[in-house]
Amino acid sequence: MFFTDPDREVPPGLATDTFRLRPITAADAEMDHAAVMESRDYLRLWEQSSWPEDDFTVEANRADLENLEQRHSERLAFTYTVLNPAETECLGCVYLFATASPMYTRSTITPVADEQWDDYQATVYFWVRKSQLATETDRALLETLRGWLAKEWGLRGFLVITNEQFTQQVDLIEETDLQLRFRFEEPDKPGPYLAYA
Image (cartoon, rainbow, N blue to C red; front, side, top):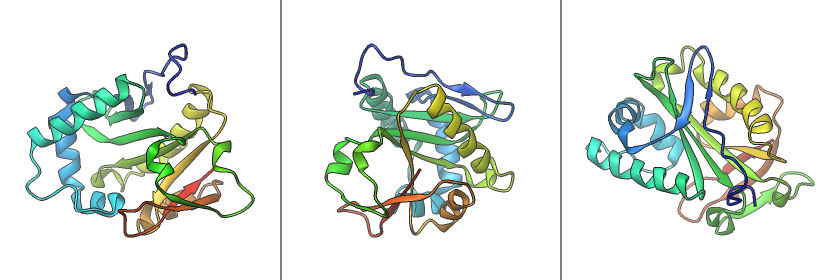
């Protein structure tokens, strides 16, 4: 499988005129924490959970990032921080998972049309900090990710994931040519997720 194949190079990131992507590390804890806390109401909806709590600390965030960094190095899943060009401010995050990930084997997946989950190799989730919505950084990020995943990752197919309750991101995705392919429910989440390709 691509994610665990040691002979396949994992793309180190990308750079545009407006943002940079690179693997997240524990050293990013303060910048990431600032973005997370600015966007906490938005992220609770995106996550369908109470995360991040109002008292979420930089140190707790650092522990989370250590886990993400470890997962990335072990090729279990990949997390990229989205930074401004000077790399002085976190603008959001991107997460890539294999479609064979255990999180999906525990989920109830329903095709919207004549689709097979196994026809896709990866899923991608993303968020941008709340103050970046006015400048449509989320729109630019989605467009850039689509090209990067196809060209640099060489994925046979990938799905862009959001949840049904997060209407801001649903609307953003549905303004593109991406089409809804699957709905799925995770056991511990209150609402369904939507997968587009």
